[in-house]
Length: 140
Image (cartoon, rainbow, N blue to C red; front, top):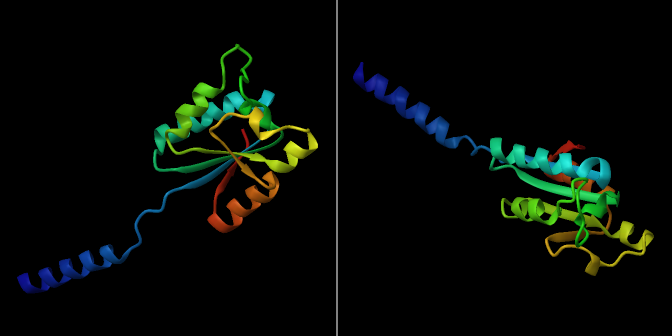
């Protein structure tokens, strides 16, 4: 009886060890209107990471959504966005700006905060994150 219990326990432990490790959630936050989405998006992301610190979050911006990533950009209360963005970057959040938007709006990379990354197309990047990395899509 003890031998049989030991075999069963060993088999269960072996089966558990063979299971894949818990995958990190992959999430893309889509911002295309900074005035309407940036403040609540940053708050959502902070709350998201407070509950799930292992989540891998990418914020993809295009159109008017890039505005909060500009040097000196401020929220409706006059607070600079750079502080909350820097805090989220330190937690692993990636912020990406659409290069098509830069061309269409005659903007230069030098106008944006150093924490920003660039992607050739915001919409294509969102689609690829969803398709290739199974990223959940959130639009604040």
